[in-house]
Structures are given as structure tokens and as C-alpha cells.
Length: 364
Image 1 (cartoon, helix red, strand yellow):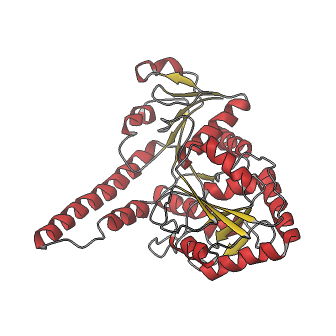
Image 2 (cartoon, rainbow, N blue to C red):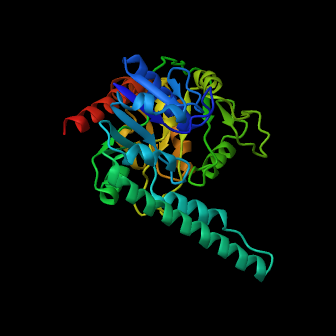
Image 3 (tube, rainbow, N blue to C red):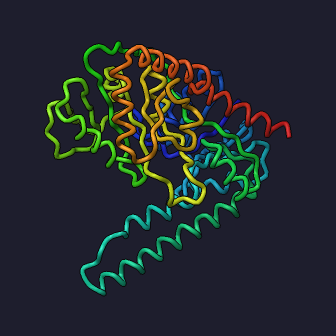
């Protein structure tokens, strides 16, 4: 197939989750023998760049235009590829509901103003930003009339997007490259705490866990991109790093945290497909993760990971103690995690599911 893959992949090597996803899916699509075009401003080393002024040279032979959508207007220029008479299929990838932007805006303006004038100004700006979100979603629904199908990362989002857009939806989760990096558990458990600063990521509970194991020689915490005022001997801090550097750190640890706050702000519940979940498991690490949404679909507790209640530091402490007490269980869980990703959630499988979805759309 020939696919024009449109995203905002403007950094190589990939640094953020979205970039990691795009990089690996395109890499595997090319490995499967498909020809992938990207915009001239994108930095993917395995795809063929095309300038926006010369799009007509590739449109004739295209099988699909694949657009990784956001709620911003950055990709509105793609409307001309969607509305014209064409032989190719148009697929959107859409991985967030409008509620995420609404929550982010409300969280941004959740502070006390110094005076009444500041408060009024804050609420006016907040109201304008919320209007932009609703209008952007309204525009998406109008544009979707010209779209053939949607790809998304979770079953929760699939149900939501089907109701919003009335289009065929394929669920293609995040994935991972499988690297057998198992570490025997001897006298010390190395725990990795990494992730973004998004408001729904739980950093407060891990801090409580670190305090509970302060200076404990049996547990060492490796914290990425989050500096705490905790100068314990069993804590190491790291700046944010590219994916290839983070991979080296993952290779050294036994356990990775994938922890979220309660999603009581979102009407559809937890809709994410946590990239870290798949990365840790695919590298033969034990995941301690919040019992929510897709996480509890992928993980069976004490089989291929350890599930904990959201925002419950005692559950996490007990999970760590369990691994320290039963090193054989740690070994079994780590290997089951690795085999789960290898069997069901590799990037190669994500790429093949993408092709299968496009093929089904072309045949209908």
C-alpha cells in the first residue's frame, strides 16, 4: 500500500509518547513493505518526505491518507485532501475526547486571583478557551462527513467516537518493541518512576511510597523529569531524556510504575492506552499499575503485572513488599509480561492491524 501519514512528528529521536507511537508504527509499516509518505516538516527517517506544493504527484496512487488528529486547528489544511473526489480512503486517528481539553483548561485556571479584576479576567479567558474547544469539536464533526474510518487506542474511546461520529472505528492500542531485558532480583529492587506532567498522572502517591521506603537499602527509586525535595540515599534523579536514553535506564530496573489519578472528571472514564505500560512489559519488567480501563484489560493481577487501586500508596507499598518477599513470583510475572506484549501488543501487530483496517474500508 501507499499511505500519506500526516502527524506532527517534528523531533527525532522521538521524545514524547505521541512521537514514539508515530515513529514505531511507520517503521513497522515500512518493514512490512508499504510505502509511507510524510510531510516535508516531519522528521521520520524511514518515510519519504513530500512537500505540500507537490501533493498532486502522489495522490493518484494513494491507498489512504492517514491523519493523526488533535483538537487544535493545526491540521485543518488536510481538509482539501478529504473533500476532493478521490480513490483513496481517509482515516483519522483520534485518541482523546473533548473532555480532556475541557479538564486541562479548568485545571489551568484553578487558582485564586489577587483581586476582583484578576478574577473577572481569568473567567473571561477561561470561557473563551472553553468556547474554542467546543467549536473545534463541532468543526471535527462536520469534517468527519468526508472521513471513511477512525483509529483509536482504547475500547472506551471507540464507544465514545462511534456515538459522536457514526463511523467505523478500529481499536489499535499502543505497543512496544520486545527486548528481553530481564534482571534477576537479588538484594535490591530498582523501581522506575517516569512520565509526563499531565494533570491526570499521579505523582503524589509515588512520593508517599518513596517516603515510606526512605533510605531502605532493599529498594532504589529512579525518578525521571521530576525533582523532589527528598535527599534520600535510595533515590536517583534524572532529567527528561530521549526515548533511546530512557531505554537504557529501563534496562537497569526491575519495576516500572504506571499510576493515574481517579478519572472522576471524565464522563467516559479512563480512556488512555498508557505507552509506559507496554514499554515496561515489553522489556520484561514488572509493572505496578492503577486498576483502571485498558490497564486492567491488559494486566491480570499477579500474572503479568500488579494492579493497585488508584491513589492508594499502601497498595503500592504492599506490591513492592510482595516482590521482595517472593522473588520467584517476580520472575514469573516479568516473563509473563514480556510474552503478553510479544503475543498481542507489539508495534508490528499495531501496523498490521492498521493495514487490515484500511483493507476492510477499501473492500466496503
